[in-house]
Length: 223
Image (cartoon, rainbow, N blue to C red; front, side, top):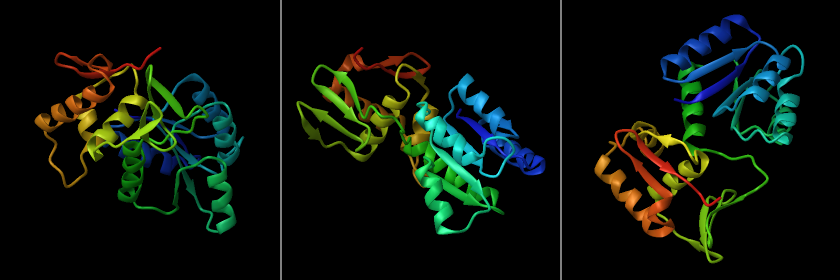
């Protein structure tokens, strides 16, 4: 289950989006003004931010800019009525990953939300994550580096490692992994997943990916 922070001051739209995303299986924390959103961001971590721009208190642009500077890494989608190129440029410079223009179809929102959650974007200054003594994950370029050399991974193994790094230390259920690895027109396979896990273990070490009986898998990087 993904945790989403929704900032939208239109009560009707806020309620509609919240109910829709909850029906899609997400946990939604909804707020109506920028200062309330700011408090929520300080209190907890989120997998995705859905931010209206023109809201009471601190606006969505400034909120995200300050949040990025404070180390908030969650991908962000702006909900906006703005249409000019300059407005969009300001939005992306403040740290957003996507935007959706009002009025919008809920199906479009679903596609944009799920696309970003699958990609697992990072917004952090430390791009290299140490996995082992000589093994690093480059978050900026989404690649594995061993002894200073880039290592080629298959598409599914690359997605899986990105997910593990993002959720390091957490137990990931098979269902969570399926949602990130397989596209809409693909059929998830436990046998294939075990193969991808086996392939990664050969490269980064068996002890880095632990199988938790009846729960899923847990990835741990070198501390």
